[in-house]
Image (tube, rainbow, N blue to C red):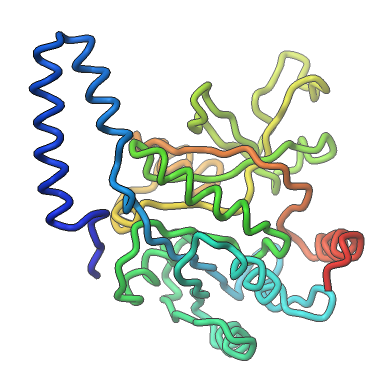
Length: 298
């Protein structure tokens, strides 16, 4: 599977010479000035840095909580179609595909015009399914956005923000989005919580309430964060992601993004205003339909 470098050979040559110029100039200015010059050079990236992005919607029929979830109807349309229609509105994506191991889902998606990549039933999670789909696409992309098929209200602006986050954070290999956690979702283990540092990088994700206080109760004054079902990968990192061994925290929480953090990689997080949530169980369908009616979404 060819993974393109962010810039051409000529750009790389020009960048290398420019980098040497910064270093020489920095040595003349001293250690502090060299550090500043290096930082300035780093953030004066070529315009093509991680410029090509593909959106992949992994979907599987089998689910312990909601079998056949992608085909569940939401106001007359399959959930996977609702999600695909929202993803297609994102301006940052060069291509959008559905990755599935089930012919029922594939036939449904082809019926409403989606491109489909068939993947193996052995994929352990959505990220591995995206990796396999990327290989089979046979095209060069710098960023792969994994959008869960159970996010029928995902805003295209959130997708664009996740792509931009990776473009602006060269030290990160992964980006994602969070929103404010509703008090009633504080102890719902289907709602994944997140904590970030002062620079907007992820510290931890959990199905439990984080951070936790001595009382064991929700602090009404604390801005808890809810993780949304979207992840942006540097394409080169996604290719090695399946080869990384499972990690203790990942297995305990059953959260694949923890494997990224436990292996020492950086993850950029953006905060967005998003009052909808994904469909985790059959009873969530009615909630989503109520939100769609309120927003007059057909």
